[in-house]
Length: 415
Image (cartoon, rainbow, N blue to C red; front, side, top):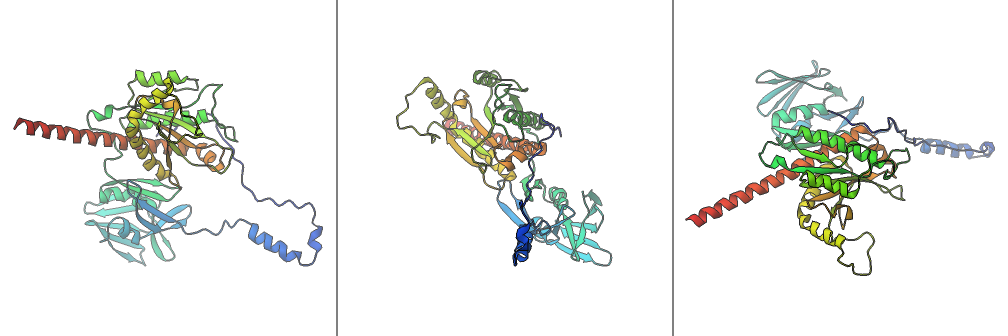
């Protein structure tokens, strides 16, 4: 797939190193200090060789855990025991392992699956169908182990599902087939989405990370990636800016109006005085939401506030899309993402469902490292595209339900 690189070729993040600054070594001559030095060296040295056994979590389309399986890391690859097939694919699975020949035979879903340890080819009968894994199954502690790619490739074949794997969190999502493919339902795929990459131009850089990376560049890279990914799935998407140019609020809204937008997504990055603040945030424009800085005086219904109130007509749809975003983006994060209701002036003129997505804190080292990584930007774009699909699917189901209800009422009246 196409990857839109960030403008700066390489961002060198500061390395975390343990540094001991000893201004003098004379104190080593003090009796008993050698034992203290040994204690410090043992407990201060990072224990990189000691690694906790990982687990792979299998989840459904809504993020609910289906199974959690103990795994083994070998040569930077994740392997699962044969019993995981029973937990994840089919509880009726049986298997036989020939130790001398190192051959594994699985019987599941009316199929016989044969594997040879050390070889990547999987053979399935009936039909003599073959699948080539990225890495072969291997022996660990005298037991046959299956690479995670076995589940990624065979789950769709055996259970007629689609899967997504998050390697950084060892998380594999299983979805009903068809939820990730191109939209084919007539009418609904014509929904027009407007993506607004915030800031832009030499005078409006937005937030900046300690490495020099800028908010305006991150959100534009993501927007361009979103444009490409959405196109592959038949989604109509327009950007308020496609280059590093400054756009006024009025110009951004004009793009939405001219293209008859029906959903508005504004992209930004966060920053904080605290280096510990991190994570994605989703903001929904709600005039009754809690203000970040509450006022003791009752606000007057100015023209701008009236616009916000008018945009509140789309609050339910905005929240529906926010929930879709939350569900999909949670797949990429360790901690659940918050949805926050606020009166948002930037969305006041967007007379359509509208959401602000803050991608992370550039003041936080972890978020900064992620947002500087083009692969992470691609993953975010894919998650947002899935949120578009989820939202469009919900609209489609609602439209079908309303149509069926109208037909029922018409039939009753004609009797």
